[in-house]
Image (cartoon, rainbow, N blue to C red):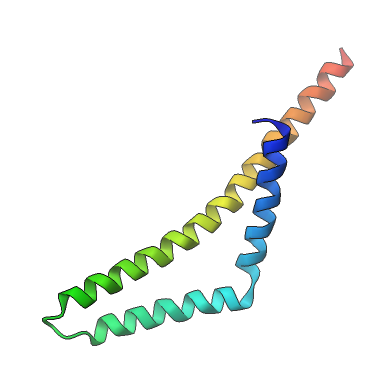
Length: 95
């Protein structure tokens, strides 16, 4: 990983962390998850199409959340890689 890419990933991670700390974002995800679950529980026995749609909505919600957490993790890995690169550069200067 080059330094530019690492810094870019770190900046993206900061933005993703801000999203995850945002009260409205967290509230929105909780609300949607509850709404989808309630709709699923209230669905008619023969309405498998509605349950499938609700299942997909829940899966999509989790995928979106997972992507944002992945951006945060990628930023942490980029930070570690950048630190390793800087340590190597300092070590090389000492020789």
